[in-house]
Length: 138
Image (spheres, rainbow, N blue to C red):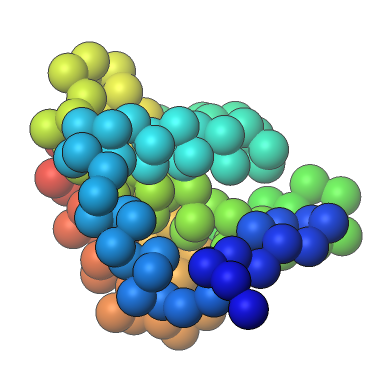
C-alpha cells in the first residue's frame, strides 16, 4: 500500500497526515490561488453567480429567512452542497487575497446564499460562518 490510492474517478491520500503534510508544504499564496481556482470552478458548474443575482444585495439581506432559497433549476438535485463547497473554497483564500471590490461583493453574495441554504437545512453554525465570512468580504 503506497502513499496514494488511485482509482478511475479520483486520487486519494492513504492517510490524512500525508495529505496534511503535502498541503502545508504548498506556499501560502499558491494555496490561496488553488482555493480560489477550485471555488470559481465549482461555482461555474452550478451557475452560482446567476443564482445570486436574483435580488439586489440590500433586498436579499432584508429577507434572509423570508424567501424561498431553493433554486434547483430543473428540481432534479439540491445544489446546496456545491454552493457550500465553492463558497468555502473562496473563504479559504480569504478576502485579503482579492483586491477587486467587485469580487468582494460577488463573494459576499455567495456567502449570503450559502448561509441561507445552511439555515434552511437547520445548520445554524454553518449559516453563521457564511454570514460572518460574507461580512468580511464587504
